[in-house]
Length: 380
Image (cartoon, rainbow, N blue to C red; front, side, top):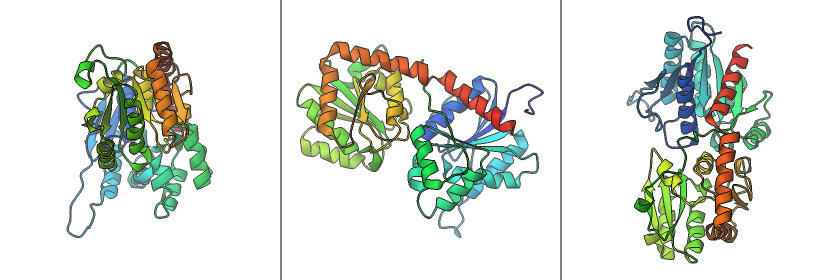
């Protein structure tokens, strides 16, 4: 099936955005895991993905250079990416290219396939969320996004919710395979110490990790924390960066709780922060999956979130955390206080979260699903 000296190891190109976010994290972690299994992995992006630190066996990173000519108002990254995919497909004899995030990666892979002179490579597109619900649904991108998905040999979505949204918005003739995101439960676990570096001994730690876009409703994070902090000593950890961070900080100042909030900025490794948290807050308008919530569960941290999008596929209400309607700030604060005030409840939620992460979203199980899907597509 592969050109790898007669064995069953595959040569796979993985294309992703390098920025802090779920799609880049999942793509990179998948590549690393596949490399451990002996597959030859080529990761392509315009910068090294934030979770690709250090050496990883069988994983090769290719930087996509972008030319800057006065003729172009914006650098033509898509053309550079298509050219690089074609180049690596030829030189490494790729069996398939797995693109994460439909826009613009799937259309770049399609163009690269037209350029290659060897056997046609297979294209698998994984949908992560806003590439479909926001970017791809924009009239300026709708037709080309639909075309790219139709021309892919296989399509996966990270949740049933996203699969249904995609089929509804684009009326696809193609089937979509749901393969959930995964977590390394050995890495995302409760650390032995560090808590004292984050908060005082008497303070409960609430945390939030995101790219601080409007859909994350970060002001709600601050509002919920304000209600909790009025009832007991607490500290809020904000990890990440994005357009709504200044508004969240301003709201904290207005509420007079700035001294109880630590803005930690972008963090390549959030295991220590999550592992020392007592509650993870995710009041998003919607999430296609909610990778940060899964990493919190694996770390033994109950999640207080919203019952929208794909979040209910990750968080079991009353079992691993609590889900409330979008904007129900009082309900979220009440749920958080219930968890913080009841040691038995908190321990049960923590243990359930670890168990669910290991049983339903383990790296080994989900990576095996991707492997099986690759071979299914290659077999035609």
